[in-house]
Structures are given as C-alpha cells and as structure tokens.
Amino acid sequence: MKKCFSKQQLHIVKVIVLLLSLCCLVFSLGCAQKNEQSAPKESSYTITDDTGVKLNFKRKPQRIISMSISTDEILLEMVDPKRIVALSGLVDSPAISNVSEQAKQVQGRFKGSNLESLLALKPDLIVAPDFISVEMLQNFRDMGINIYLYKTPSDIIGIQKTIANFGKLVGEEENAQRLIDGMNKKLAYVKKRVSTIPYEKQRRVMLCGTHSTMYIPDSSFSNVCKYAGVRDAVQELKYDYQCILSQEEIVRLNPDTFVLAEWNYDGEHDVNVLAQELVTNPSYKSTNAGKNKSIVTIPAARLLSLSQYTADAVVDLAKAIYPEKFSEVKPMKIAFCHLNTSMGPEEKNLTKLEQAIKLAAERGAKWVITPETSVQGYYFYRNDKSKKDSVDIQPSEKLANIRKLVKEYNLYLFLGAGEFDAKEKKNFNSCLVFGPSGEIIGNHRKIFNHGIGSEAWASPGKDEVPIKCGDITVGALVCADAWFYEHMEAMKQKGAQLTLVIAAWPPTKETGDPLPKWKENALKSGMPFLLCNQTGSNPYMDMTVGQSVVIEDGEVKLTHQGDEAVLLFEMDIENGQVLSKEYEIVKM
Image 1: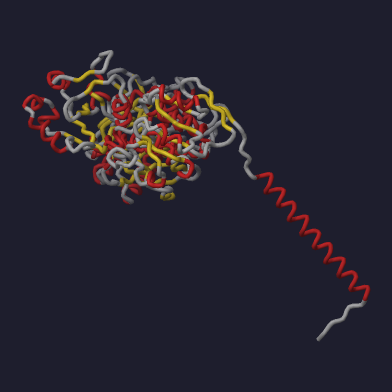
Image 2: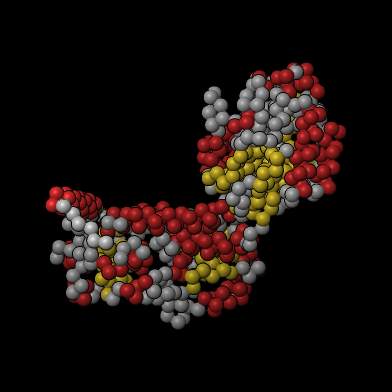
C-alpha cells in the first residue's frame, strides 16, 4: 500500500537525509585525513660507512648495486629485489651462492671492473666490501654516487653487526632484525645440543683444501667451529701470519676429522677425489682422522659464507660431527612429587613419598624428583631441636620400601633427605640419587646452607659433583644453590647436561620471587632446568605459592603451584628439549 507524507513530514525527512549525508562526508574526510597522517613519509637521512665516510640520502635507495656474494645474500633477503639493479658475478652459482634462485629476479651483474655497464644502471647506492679496489670505487664517488664500504666480518658477531648496519643503510631495520633473529634461533638450536660437551671432549677438526691446508689466524671457519661445539685444530698454532701447513704440521696437530668445503668451481676440485687422497695419504694414516677415515663434507655456499647463512654452516658442521646429538626425539617421562612434607613427621612423609613414587612409576615415569628435605620435613629441626641428633646415615632402613619401588620400577630417584656423615660427624641437607638397582649412585650436599633457623641442623657441602644417570649427566642442586650461577657453571664444566633442583622456596616478601633468577641462570648455562618445589601452608611460610618449574632456553615451559600432586611431563633428555605442553597432574 502506498504511503503518503505531509509537507511537514517530507521536510523533516529531507533534513534527516541531508544530515546523514553530511555525517558520511565528515566521516569519509576524517578517514582520509587519518590515512594521510598514517602514510609513511620518507625523509632524508645520513649513514656513516665502516671507513668513516658519510653518505646522505633523500630517500631509501632504489637502485642498489651489490659487489660481493655475501652482500648479495643479505640484501636479497632484506629488500625488494626490484630495488637491486646488479649483483656479484658469483651469485648465480648454487655451489657458492645460497640465493641463486632469488638472484634471477635481478638482471645486472658486477664482474671485474666493467664501470661503464654499472654506470648505465644509474645506481643510487653501491655496497662494497673492503677488498674491492678503492681506486675504482673513488671513480663512482667522484660522480656523486653513494658508496658504502664495509669491513669484511670474520665472525658471527661481526656478521650480525653488518646485517644491522645494512638495515639502517637501506631503511629496512625490521627485516635486518628478522635475519639476525633467524640466525640466533639456529645457533640456539645447536647450543642446546652441544653446549654440555666438555671442552676437552670436543672433537678437533681441520679444514682441508684441494692442494693445501691453510693457517689463518681467527678465521671465519674457526668461529663456526666455536658455535658448533668443535675445535679448529689449526688455531692451536700461534703464527702472526697466514701460511700453508706442511704435512708434518698436520700430522703433529692430529685432527679427529677432516672437513671439506664442497665447491668444484673449475672442474678440478672434486671433493670426492680430495677425500680419497686424504684417506690414502700414508702421512695421514697415523692421525685420528686418517685412522678412522673421518671426513665430513659441508656445502661451500654455507661453510664459506659471511652472511646470515653462516648460522646454517654451524648447524651443518655440528650435525656432521655429533650426529648422535641430533638424532630422533627420544621422549622420557619425568615426575615431580609436588608435596606438602615440610612439617613432617617423618613417618607420614615416608608414606606419602611411597604413594607418590608408585603413582609416578605406574604412569611411566623413569625419573622421580622430590622436594628438599622431603623425608624428615623441612621444619623438622625447628619443630623439635632434639631431632638434630637423630639424622640417619643414608640409606637408612626407613627407606627400604622406597628403595624397593625404585628397583621394581627401574627408576632414578632424586630424594630430598637429611643425612649424617659418620666420618665427618656432620649432618647434611642432601639430594640423594638412587639408581635402578635401589642403591645410592651419588648425592649433592647443599652448599649454600643458611646455618641458622630451620637449617641450623646441617653443615654446608663443599663440592659440585655431577651424577651419571644412564646416558645423562645431572648437575643436582639443593634449593638456594640454584640462586648462585657459579654452582651451575661448575657442574657444567664437569660434564653436567642439565640442572636438577630440589627445593623448598616459595616467593616471599623477604626474599622476593626466585623465578627470574632461575630463568637467568638457566639461560646463561644453556642447560635445561628442572626444579621440584613443595607446597602446603604452615606456621612459618606459605608454600602453596611455591612453583615446580621446567625451564628451557631461559623460558618457563611448565609451571605448577597449589595442591599436592604428582606432575608428569615428557622430555627428550639427550637433546634437552621439553616435549610436553603442560603437566599431567595426578592429585594425591
């Protein structure tokens, strides 16, 4: 049905439509203004190269020439290839270039001293390493072209600095940081697997060329070795100059492995032929590498690179030398007994521990970890000072049922208990480690002992001694020992592959939250960090806020506080990798 409006109603409708139209116009203008304000505006900037020359830019360079393969690799992954007009002559060879495919997007190539062809490209920036002829570069500078000359880096820190500088140079600092972050992720991946190898057990390697082995002080290869957890044998020489090593020197250095860079650039440098020559050379048969025919080949594109791909060389070398460290994931279940044991009494604690250990074992745990002084109870002395004289020599008869469970389920048990040393006539606050036989295979006596209050019953321990648990060497600590990094470092230097802590340490007003310090020390050590805390409220301290944590690469992967529970999780212990995303919590 047709609806009619009066003249007054029609006037009102027109006014409303007009107002709505004005609102839309104002809104669209506001959006336009906002977009205009947020649009990036390029401004002029000045950059100083590694020789101190200042370069002035009115905007980001749009016609860049790269004069070396390393610069090619950095810039092609930092800027839009449309902003690059020429790359080095080596960029198209996949044997030495990691960006040969990306390079196809850029037509120009720099080869030798073809100045005219480069000038025809009308560059607004030329990026050159310090081995390019200064005289040739000066010709470009005389024509008003910006030349950025940089010092060729010889180590990973230098490479990352160069990448950061390039980011500022071409106005792509975020992309530069992305490349650096990618490198650091790869280096952390390797560090996690090789950092626990003691220096004296690191493999000694030697980079061999087709016709010679060079000594170069502080070479880039030596730096790659450092990050890969191996030792460059030639750096044991202390010459002040580069030189070719004689066969006698190679034999004397006695490397464990010969390393070859795969790059047959002229058809006469077949890496397989070189490998055969090395293993058949009578002079080298007395070396470890010769006797064991230990030769590894790494693509030259990565091994000889001075770009972000140097991090890939670290991965390649570490995997080649220590394949066992990069083997398939081997999950193992571990259990924290997050219990309320601080007030005792001992008989009650032992019953609770037996129950928790059995629960953990029945669910597949192979390592079971308890809190500090979980046998007697952390406050046993504070509650009854006469108990100081009744601390047992361990293992006492009271632990018979626990030891039986350990043996029955083939466990490693890390038990917090007081122990009396009859020889020293002293009590110690210890982490006792039981092996699958049910016998004690090692212990750690708390070093940073308060000596007052609740811990006045115990004497401080003296040494950090790692404990071999199957194929893994554990640096066990007790509570406050984990606050002081020197204890973790001492364990690491003696071969520890992870830090395991039994504790009675919630956050408090007096001492603050220990978690940031645990994270800091774990990151610094490069080792996984496992800490079993206790819970429960008592007259002396609220332990319900105490956290049982698993830390990897300085980051908390798992944490729990609150009710009593057995906390189960999986780790690839050999590779130091936490596999579980959360605890499996079994309430007591």
